[in-house]
Amino acid sequence: MNKQTYILMIFEGAKTEPNILENIKKYFLNEKKEVVVKAIFGTTIYSLYQKFINFDDFDDDLDTFTLAQTMNSELEHISKDQIAEIYMFFDYDKQASNSSDEKLLKMLEIFNNETEKGKLYISYPMVEAIKHLKKETSFKDIVAKCEKAYKSEVAFSCDEEFKNFNNYTKKIWEYVVNQHSKKANYVVNDNFIFLTSLISQNEIFEKQKEKYINISENVAVLGSFPIFLLDYYGIDKFKI
Image (cartoon, rainbow, N blue to C red; front, side, top):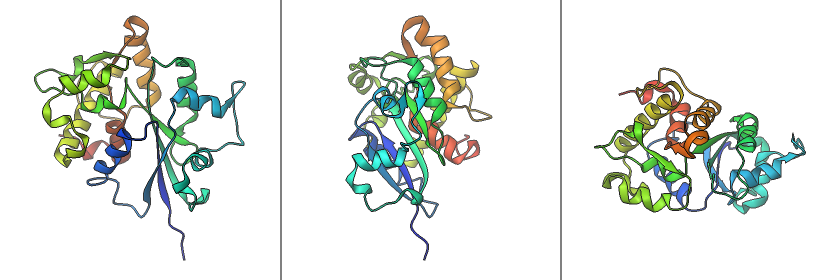
């Protein structure tokens, strides 16, 4: 009898990201035999860097699943060989005291494959970027500072239909993915149209630095979950 296999989703936060995942699972991630499970790291990407990197070298004795398992008791019944894919979702968190663009770039270089160490997705500036949509304003032009006040700012400024992740429908997700895809294309290629090919997280980060962070300390608002869905299913699924 074959063992059950799993897709592991690792989150920075214990509340918002799991809520988003539960809503996504109503419409997506249910076509394969793998069961989706989650783990909470409860720390910034820069603190996670300290766990994996010793003197600028990756600690080969530490693997992503084992670390997640030590921090999440609900994974105790799962073994490493049952994990088919690992996805990691973290905020840019420039305001964090230990933030470092060099550290983030290294993490993106290491965690770039879901079937190996895991694939890392970054939200700019935070996971709430998903809902920073106002139909009377082009998403192309929406930027934000990396500060805690962003959460309340986006809740105040976004359209009502995007405020509560629990209420998202499949139609809303398709719109959200489409908009964030266009924004990723604009950040990387200066063209606010739906992507014709996928863009890597490294490319997005490099262009965020070049065009926004190094100039004004703003970021182009861009969510991690919409880009993940685009990568997972491919461009044709979301093209309108």
